[in-house]
Image (cartoon, rainbow, N blue to C red; front, side, top):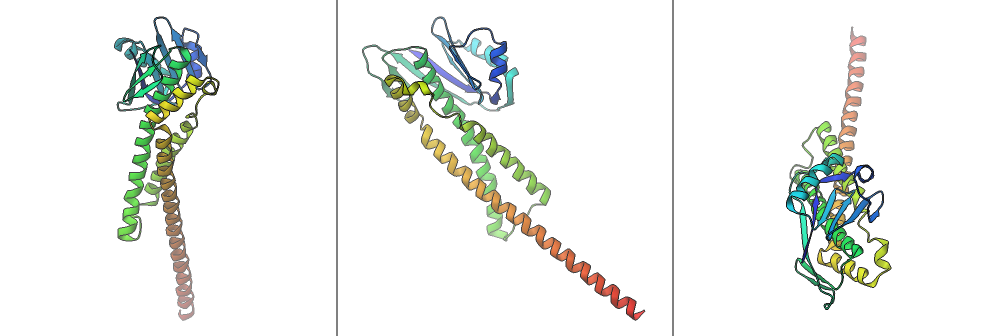
Length: 259
């Protein structure tokens, strides 16, 4: 029985720099990931969206490696974002998906890679769902103000800061979600294809992606509304300035004629 674990430690990992400085040749690698197959059924997977996966590593080894990897991280993440799965290798059994466990008829580098990849996507989705929910909650505060007062009670500067912060969250999510596609190798092997589809169903990857996408669309619509409100507020302010200038001009003209 193997335990497969994935930890999200940052929003980004510089995989290219890590590969250049890490000793060992990856089994599979690209600009976005590095997968290492080592002796004694030990596997290591580093993904650019801030996740590292382990198989066969002890607690001290994992802790030491994560500390080492943090020098290649951008925007470290606070909180405990972790996912794990038990894998039983049984040549007499069929591919079986259970709650928090999996039975596979064979184990090789590609099988392990697909398992870690799906767990990594799930733990990353946990983080993105948290960001999406925070963005949605913060926009709801302003929509509640619109419902209660008919306007947003916030200064222009603070509103622009809020919009900028929310857009950064939204961009951070979209910058990484594009990698949540299945690798090409799953289309070349029946077992890998069934394994990938089963794991995506187990972790609800596709459904969670759609839900997050829906939340982000709501946030986008709210931001557009807030921007319109800001422009309307500025337009009204300019109109009053013009009215005051005209009034001052009229007063000045009257004063000059009288005196």
